[in-house]
Image 1: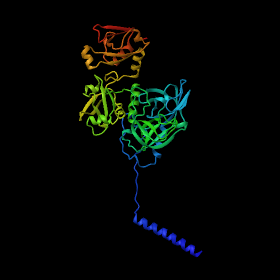
Image 2: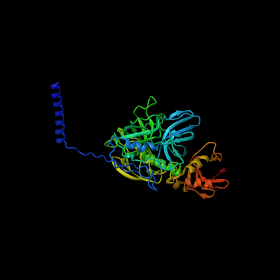
Image 3: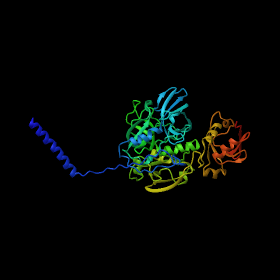
Image 4: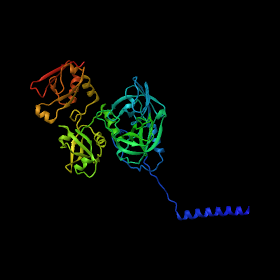
Length: 476
């Protein structure tokens, strides 16, 4: 017994001695972790959709996400839609008569961003906040090209998430996915950024923009429209889709980058439609064979297969065979990366395009134009009005104006069964006057029709004929 006590005392003294020696050799160090405080409310007059937050924190440390989760969860809502007798798309929870998804409050006065597929075909949209309050939401605007939608509820003083800078995200950086999978409210999962600029061919729109942030944060049905948040509690993406064979999460989830989402929802808020600026080029990803033939050191860039006459790119000097390598100083290694960069700007904005031709690098300032081939911003009401009457138009190119010696709008399509079709007008007609007044922009045409009293008389020409033609219809 005495021997056992002696051994125990010896072990205890040895342990204490070792600890004293270690503390003497290794002096204690003070470790400080500095975090930027999360701003969830705007100052008076601040527009939360206007500016990109500059990055002033180290994302990889700490890996304690409690502050980010506490900032994000109050601003993520549950969305339930009542459908028009149809199933649900993508991977939101539900089917048939109703479905659920998520949304993110982006301003204290009730603006909510979500996915277009979450609310597509909905007769009624019900929003439940984190504090269990329930509201009926109004659709402000939709954009199938990016699968985004903007809603609004009648409330104020709401918690909201500020936008972070999605461009500054790095591969391997920690992020959180916040949403309502399987109707489990306020669920937070963590993962890393697996890739950026991903295109997975899920959007059906003709002018789709797919440049997703790929993560391995667990995302499941019901997460659609929820928040992708960095470790500083800032919104860096809108969770949109997963790639799966089972219908459930398998390690691949995708989010619309915040820098693109911010521009889209600002347009939806201000105009009701997205003001999409176009370069005016047809493109494809650069192949290794093309890169070698062009004398490029790497297979990075976007190959131009065609340039539309009269477009901003054409007027700036870009031509078929050029390779775009940067937009405003940002590398464009793939089509999706280039489309994301251009998609952040409106018609009338100038962007700097760096490209390679015959092994030489050039730069050009390109004025972006709209589908109508002009720089006018069109509201959703104006677009809908022209569509309701049955036509799509665009501005004349510089060459067309010179060739025809007129200014006006070219009719590019006419819808069957419409008022315009009933006049026997044909695509290619150039509208020069409305009720005797010259028109040269979509805005002038739409406003003229909207304010017309009685018949609308459209005057113009066809390129292949010399005489003037007239078409009239009753707006109402």
